[in-house]
Length: 627
Ligand SMILES: NC(=O)c1ccc[n+]([C@@H]2O[C@H](COP(=O)([O-])OP(=O)(O)OC[C@H]3O[C@@H](n4cnc5c(N)ncnc54)[C@H](OP(=O)(O)O)[C@@H]3O)[C@@H](O)[C@H]2O)c1
Image (cartoon, rainbow, N blue to C red; front, top):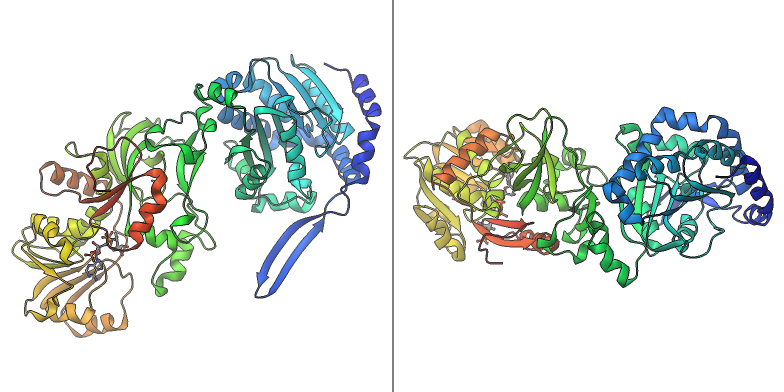
């Protein structure tokens, strides 16, 4: 540990460094806003603080800096992300006597948090551009067992040899710089192969705006932070949410990456628990190797609406169950027609605005898709009464999405039920949306024994369940599908099948009590021709009536029931479970893909011709799908 006098000597001896950052990096700008309007680009930039200006500002801020961080909960937030990244195996990850560099040590809050988590003396080097901050850091770190060396220095020109440190870290420094990658390159240069880099940045948010205004910083998005880290050649880069307090999470984002290590080191690290998730790039992980423990999980993430290629396999933070929630280890999920609609933002024009508000205006609000799943309860919140660890369950996540991930948290009173015991997880995952939708609408239509029902689109997910459930309710069922699906629909119990490629169902003189339009491919006039006088027309795909429908509603005794989100309901799932166990209904599985082939799975579903359901398996597949 150095005395204040020793530190002062270091400042004095470091004049050359001081000089270098005084003369460079001035007249640089920080982008504030840039947007294309046709062929015009409007862009606003702000002159960055020069190094002396920044030094001066930090020198002035130093006396109250520590108190301010305490007030906003930063020391605890720093400790939280260290625990998330390093956990119990911190010393295995960093080595027995880690050598750590804190770039922009400030008052030493970040380094102090690491002391609390590592709980062992380590060698700490730290730099800052502000002498006042360094003096405070010296006071604060004085009482630790660390071997500390503090220096005046600029993160863009680190005064260290290559490959010295096991961990380089920085908090709220990079966003001040015109090009943060210059500093990141330096931090990577001084890192040992296999070493970790942790960067905490002010994020673009309403709260972050105050920081940007005062400190002229970049408004960094997690995606941008990741791209900066990746640009330096770091691997396994990902962002973690920051701390447990909403305030800190709103204001900051923390991004982690690892310097590629030598093959010998890689194999050594791969044998270690927590670092397994860092050790392999997501693309290399096979479906049956999903064993990442600790705080990260694999998930399919999309950050913009578009074709299947917007879906990416990433490592993200594992969700923590609230007191009333269960955390489900997902074994299987599905790709539904609704997933295609949400991913590509394909909605009827009349529904465009409300859908944008619900799903996210400029980009998806919920970056992980997936509306149904089956798996096992892995942990429960302290108030949970209905489920316990190890329960096999199936669930609809609906508008909370998030089933394309290894773990999903749901309130215990959400649409979750114990899985039917006689089917696989893949088959159970396909029940919540299709079967529940069919059940909801058939009940709404009050389907009765002996009534005649026509299911249009009988080979799709909703259609296959509608045929079986209508049969269960005692109706006489006619299914409409294409030639290749005739046998399958018959095998589900349909009394009659009509091949839509060869025959127009409305021309054979038959009339029905209920017409269930499951895919919105029939003509409304044809349906009206074939509907009995008091008949019910169900269309699950159209949220609002067209003029023609309104007119029919006003002028005839025929009833129209249009698409709405069927309410989340665990009771319906339990009812379906009983039907499955009694052999009354089953899931038709068309194809089954591993998680990393999600893009192929979406491409297939986008074509609009799946038979029943397409499943994504995250565990050993028990189902014999014809993939
Ligand atoms: N309101 C709600 O709560 C709710 C819930 C779930 C789903 N939905 C909506 O319901 C719709 C259906 O969903 P889904 O998952 O059941 O669809 P799906 O499985 O993707 O439907 C595909 C099926 O439609 C058939 N099909 C395609 N063109 C056809 C045509 N011209 N005539 C007859 N059948 C045709 C295909 O058979 P062929 O290959 O033989 O043509 C294929 O088997 C979607 O629009 C979805 O968004 C609504």
